[in-house]
Length: 358
Image (cartoon, rainbow, N blue to C red; front, side, top):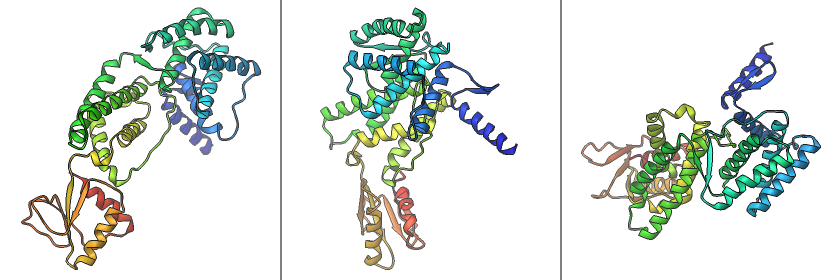
């Protein structure tokens, strides 16, 4: 019985990520959240083992929908993209056939900038009504659900119109202002390239924020990652921003997965901003009592931890930001890191992170 109780608790905890409950052998809650749950279970757990088993009718009609969407938008799908789109249709058709209907149409509106998406909205409703035999209102909601999914997967250019829209854009604007001041106001980057980077990152931020703020993200994995010490400056930038803004706006509990939001912000910075664009170089003086043999070793080991905006020196200067030694120098105005002994293998990244702390 104790194991059964543990499994029940684990299930309730897992369902809690989707704001769902388990009652009388059934999953209870918002239909949109239930479909996201099924998508994650099938994609992440069964995809490595076997394909989920659906009735032949569901497979055939879902294939028709996949072909319709691919043809309409002339999509060039990756193999994983094909798997996700096929699974999306099969799960949604399975739920529709069993009279489980989406109810979020009035709350989550997906807007397309192009006439093509507007026309698709109408054409898809007719297609769903004809293939899956659903009433007009149901077809309208299911079409909006499909467009939402295509937008989330970046298969079409779309915008998310919801009650959180102001917060989505405000967070993107504020973060880009912070990033620009910290990393892009440097002579190493031209005005044209700076403008391109800001625009590209801002567009991606809108998509990231939209997925999480309106609970639309299908891939709600529990990914946690420890970044190398060379990305500590990005780590501080992202964590400071997210906790300050998310807590200020009282929306932290509304995120499906706060760790995943942090991860995507980090990946955006790492992919967009080369470390040599970081405007300020940190000058580090290494001065161990035993002499240059030890100094060279410390510098070499820290350099092996990855590239960053650190310039190592063996003499103090007016530019020195950090002084590493085994002797306390109370008269120094720069920051000092005291080494009681040479760091062991597992300690070098920690020391690198200390240097990057500003």
